[in-house]
Amino acid sequence: MKHFFVLSLFFLHVTSFAQDNFRIIFYNVENLFDTHNNTMTKDDEFTENGSRHWNNYKYWQKIKKTSKTLKIIGGWEAPAIIGLSEIENDTVLQNLIYTDALKRYDFRIIHRDSPDRRGIDVALLYRKDKFFPLNSKFFPLLDHNNNIIRSREILYTKGIVKGGDTLHFMIVHFPSRYGGYKNSEPKRILAAKRIISICDSLNEKFYNPKLIIMGDFNDESSNTSLQNINNNSNLNLLDSDHGTHKFGGKWGKLDHFISSNSLMNNSSTYIKDNQCKVFYEDFLLTKDDKYLGKKTNRTYIGFKYNGGFSDHLPIYIDLIIK
Image (cartoon, rainbow, N blue to C red):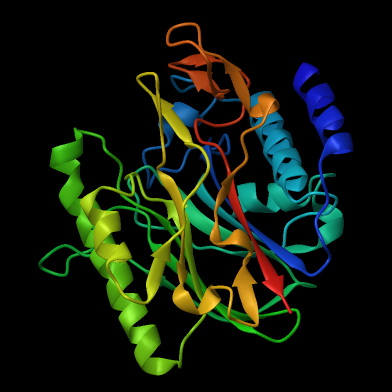
């Protein structure tokens, strides 16, 4: 009840944005699993008999908190586009968009199950009064021999925004740092290579396409994967005002927005301030007793249920549509 009270207070004070703004959010919601065992993936810990004793109460608490967070980030109304990572399946997305916080906005879902070993995926939610998708495609990550890597796919969607402009979106969740940064880095470099290849194809097919890439890259802007993407003359890694994930007492920027240069200020549709913002608010945070300051308010701390939100903070941008 305490978190919901804080959410309500924050909502009363949140600043609304102009109606011609088109707010886009990305949020790694951290292990949004249902309670059922999928025998095809390693989701056993998030079942009632699993190591985390994941049950219906915990599941619906997470659904409600996630949906209210997404609504609040939008201002006085829900955002136009929401990119998500670490969701298990279509069921959790359906449950999410039909919560009291989101159901009146008539969100639609773009998603499919990925080859990820744990069964976590990326997804795109869109308001049908703000965005009309024309087509979508899912790109698996490939190794040097063109074999599929058991990780999250890249979700690509092309569509028309209210006002008539065509936008291209990509949602990503790069391979994790599990096993150590150096050992895992080659897979993230391959994921970046896949993005560059998709961008090259788009530039060949469309004149000056308006493209937004968002996701959890599991890398900082200074790391090789993001440097390779940012070195592309058509792409721009947007700076953010705060870290999104705290590890070892340090805030890191692992979640990013990348835009095409065609979305700069001289465009009919452009990103406000050319900047990505981190939704750094008290109800998503808790006191960091070990390292001081604050840290993300997680659902679990180790295997102990904490009842929080996520180990990542959401990020967002506003598009101005003339």
